[in-house]
Amino acid sequence: MVDGHRIVVLGGGYAGLTAAARITEANTGVSVTLIDRKADFVERIRLHEIAAGSDPRDLGYRVFVEGRGGVFLRGMVSAIDLDQQTLQVGEAALPWDMLVYALGSYTDIDSVVGVREHAVSLDDIAACKALYNQLYKAPAGTKILIVGGGLTAFEAACEFAERLPGLDVTLAVGTRFAAADEPGGLSQHAVEHLENVFNRLNVKLIVGSRVASLHPGSAIFEDGSSELFDVCLWAAGFSVPKLARQSGLAVNDAGQIQTDDTLASVSHPNVLAVGDAAEVIVDLGGRCRMSCATGRPMGERAAMTILGRVKSSAIEAFSFGYSFRCVSLGREDGLIQFVDAQDRPVEEVWTGARGARWKEYICQRTLQGIGFDVDVGDPPDTPPAHP
Image (cartoon, rainbow, N blue to C red):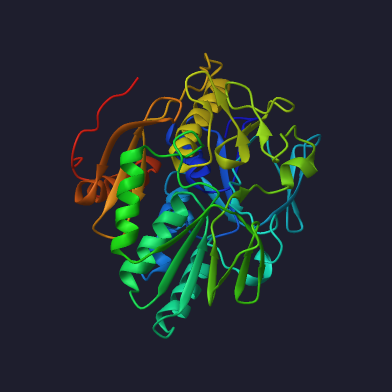
C-alpha cells in the first residue's frame, strides 16, 4: 500500500461501485475499501421487473471487489468525522485519506402525509419480492394505485399490467403528463406512444392534480378528488441520506453534496461525491439529474480524480451531455426518447420491439460498464447523434 492513500468508497450503487472498480483495476498500490449495508449490488433500473416476478441476478460485492484486490466491508456508516478523517462503522472507526461519498437516493416517503404508513416503494429487492408475493396472490380486480409522473412509475405500471393482468392498474401522474418543458419530459410522439400503450394494457391515467395525502385504502388529491386502492406504490420523487449534512459537508437545499468540476466537495476536497447524493453541474449538460445515466460516468471521473492525485498527474474536469432516455413498457415494448445535451426531448423516438431491444441492451451494457462479466452482444441498432 502507498502510505497516505487509503481510499474508502461509501455506497455500492452505480456510481460508487464504478469508482471502486476503476481505482482497484489501476493497480497503483492504494488501499480501496467499499462499504455498503447490503451484500449484493442491486440493479435499481430493474426493480420494477423484480416486483412483477423476475428473479434478481447474483451480483455479490465481495467477489467483485476482492477479486480486483480491494476490500468489501458490509455495514452502516453512522457518522463521518471530517477532521479526523474517520468513518464510524458499528463500534469501529475506519480511517481514510480520500473518501468517495456515493450513498445514492431513496424514494421520498415523508413529504406527503400518510405515504410512509400506507404505501410501498421500489427501493430494495426484499420490498420488491414482498410486493410481488402480495400482488401474485391477490384476487382478480385488486386495485393498485401507482403515484408518480416519472419513468419508474411508467415502467412499473406497464410491467404489472402486462405480467399480472388480473390487476386493476391506475397511474396518478400529477398535474401534467410528461410535458416536454418539464424535467424528464417527453416529445409529443413519445407521449402518444405511452398513451397508446396504457390504453392497450388497460392502465387508467389520472392527470391534473397531485396526491395530497394517503389514508387506509384511499388517496386524496389536492383538488379534493379521491381514488380508492388496495395497494399503493409510491414513485413520486427521491430524497438523499442526511449523513452528508449531519457531518458538516457543504450541501444544497436537497442535502446533496456540492462539488467542484472534479467532483470534489467544495468544503472538503478529500471527499468526492458522485451519483444521486451529489450536486453536479457541468457546462454541457447543466445540472445532472438523479439517474444511473449520470452516476456511472461520475464514478469513472471520480476514480480518475483520485488516481490523478495519487500519481500527481493532471486532473480533468467532469464533462457530461445527455443522449437519450430508456423506458421499458413491459417485456415486448419500449420507448427510447432521444434528447439534446441538456436532456431536452427532440422529436425522434424509438418505440415497440425496437425500443424494448435497445432498453435491454442498455441495461446489460450498464452492468458490463461497471465491470460485471455479462454477455452484451452487439447493439441492436445505432442511435443518432444529437448536438
